[in-house]
Image: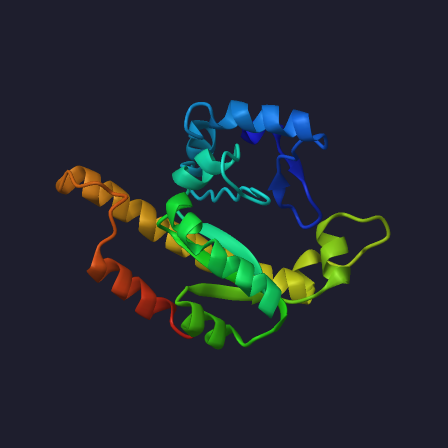
Length: 205
């Protein structure tokens, strides 16, 4: 996979998906046919973190295999009434997609802490409305600013660091369970979840 990357402004290596729906579905089917093993191998490279943009997810989506294989899943949502109603309606489904899911809020709306406590979900961070920063990250012509200098770029860097830290913790825990206890690593441990929750308290204030 690393042989097929291109560099975005700022140096981030990406593998761009096909623009057409059918072509994208075919590419995802190839990636997930072996349980997303190609992404797992890329992510297991020392010092590497692989982020897969799975778009909108629903029943039968080709990206479900990627979600099942991920060490952490970030679900994006706007913190307004209509969007949060959609989140509530799909919480059970999200729990089936991954036991390591957490939320990222986008733009204004209800405060982060209020959303987390009211819905009983974990929120890792919040992305600002930043059209200029999005244009820079997307490589739009004429945008000379460094991606990391925009509000969006700085927020993404914080969330990426936190997600990478959690992914490493989850991966080490899975390996420890497989090596020492023979237990199912997909089964959550109450003590472990509690300690992770405490370590993430206040991150998004």
